Length: 377
Image (tube, rainbow, N blue to C red):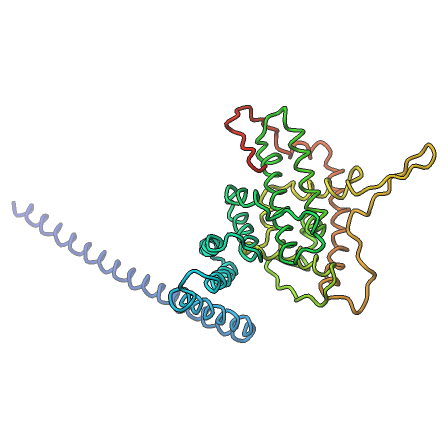
């Protein structure tokens, strides 16, 4: 019995010593872990301080602009709740449009959409296109296709005979509308293949017609889309654009195309085109710049021979001059890179052979009438 008691006591002592040792080890481990966490926090703070210092040293102008935008945003938000802008009217509409622009630049697209929708409800005519143009771009960026399609049913993109005499705001609205319609049609027919098999050829022809209409209105947008990797070197997404240096039509169309591709919708509509799939650049390039004669080609009959006089695939630029607008100089440089990309694309596609066909998606036909929506596309 004595032996059993001794054994029992020894077991208790050993157990206590073991528990104490474990507790001590846990304490040391906890202290060590706490020390590691403190060191990590200290290093993180140092990195933050260093990065703040770099921003002050190298991004002073950018930081000032961000501060100004924040202050301006707060001021506009206060104006919506007090003063003349608190009541429906032209002043409130102006505040809503400006605030929506600031929030779009800050990446707050949802808030910007709500503000523009309120402004459009307040003034449905939108004669200056200050609401519908950015709102349509935001709808496209957020993949709100139903809302975008509904807006495209109106006169936003219809120019008619007064295209030459139209205001700059109206021509830019038409650019956004025509290219948005072409993109929605392309996605529906070429990506989703949401049409009956017997109607596919007719629908593809309709997509081509809509793309050609957009191209005739502003060919520089299509040029950027087809050769985006080259143009993004000189005109990256979100880039700042210089104000128009003249009243020339060429410079106006270039700036209009760049606003559409690089700025509208918060990240530029070129991102929306690229998100539609890997073959969209090839489709635009082949549809507009390669292949058979386009709708602008003319024929000249000489005896038994018929000559087709087709305009150059890319819109011609004037001879280089030291007095030309800066945006034209940059576009000229980007086009040179685009020509190299064009040659590279063609060579790559020619070398792929059967591999290119394997990469393309298999065609899927929809035969259920309920699966086809022909409202817009």
